[in-house]
Amino acid sequence: MICCVLLIGFLFLFTAILSIKLYLVLRKISKKNNKELTVGFFHPYCNAGGGGERVLWTAVRAIQKQYKDAHCVIYSGDPVSTTNIIKSVEMRFNIKLLRNIDVIYLKSRFLVEAKYYPIFTLLMQSLGSVVLGLEAILKYVPDIYIDTMGYAWTYPIFKFLGSCPVGAYVHFPTISTDMLKNVQSRRTAVNNRTYISNSKIFSLCKLVYYQVFAFCYGLVGKQADVIMVNSTWTRNHILELWQKPQFTFTVYPPCDVSEFNCIPLEIHDGKTRILSIAQFRPEKNHELQIRAFYNFLDRLDSHINHPVLVLIGSCRHEEDYQRVQMLRNICNELKISEKVEFKINLTFQEVVQEMTNSIMALHTMRDEHFGIGIVECMSAGLIMIAHNSGGPKMDIVVEYNGKKTGFLADNINTFSDAMEYVWKMDYNDLYDIRTNARDSVSRFSTDKFEDVFLSTFRLLIR
Image (cartoon, rainbow, N blue to C red; front, top):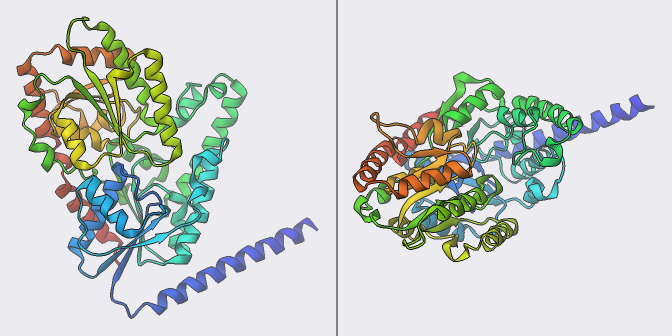
């Protein structure tokens, strides 16, 4: 009886997949006469305003520049009109698209939101992305499919059902060997809550779950025909998980530093504002910035002009706004509310203005995959203090021409130490670091991103 049920279920699933495949093939044949090359970008949060969105829109513009007959389509779940999305891109990133795009609106985006899955979050979000991917391909079948948000479980859908070449731009692996190590060593982290790290049984169960998930993640990731990664750190993890070295390319994110380079380095002399630029997400660890800043203030003489911490970032949804309120509450508890400013969803020009009024910048995310905001701050002449891990450690805040480009730290005390050290540095020493840091970030220009991205993109054109 059970065998019969399983057989019927298998036949039903097989028939459903075959029907979808036939439907999509017929749709693709029906538009063969159209000589346009259609490129579908899967980016359900295309209006979020972060570094990942800068990559998306710079890639779209690069394709429009190079291929006059290419038409770009964005799969998005943002309930915003195409016109307003394009306006937002210009306002936030100073990116002007050359031609019209189409936005395919996805109604099932809520299925990939972590708030609905208190347990087995990674697995449930990944399964949710399968449904989201099916909705996307049923609404539109592109000639080339590119995922720019890390939804690897959609690759088999577009490759086998849509017969599309699949490209992946990976900012951050869904699961990494670092996450496995956190669970194995029972260390509390963003992905490993205290009640799990304190329990041997829970930790063992979670480790098995992560190992199985990592294996499945490797299987779906391998379906990408071309893999672009944004940093050395991400490349190392993706090579270990997806094991396609010959099709894996490091494509540093586009950092449009031209406008930041115009800021005179001398303008930072005597400034008292400390800047932070990062989306208000839990992994960015703004709380560490606030507590380190509190420690730093405690070390300063009472009679001097005290610095101000300015937290700049975008909020995607209500959860992010709640997180900002939580950070405000921490400032109230520490009695430093008047010394901490929150600036949400600023325009590009407003961010530039804040940079000109600051002396240094903080970035506290552990294992940040790259860090476009870090590059921008260094270009603007701010002394950068970033977390001693991930992209900042391996690619960005590294010695250049044998000299310092910034500072690295990893806890409240070391961040406080770095802030105090910079605060007390001689002007000439600060100027030398600023100059060297600005020279070093030419490696991450928009032009270089476009060149490497397009050379990789050509591998997807059949």
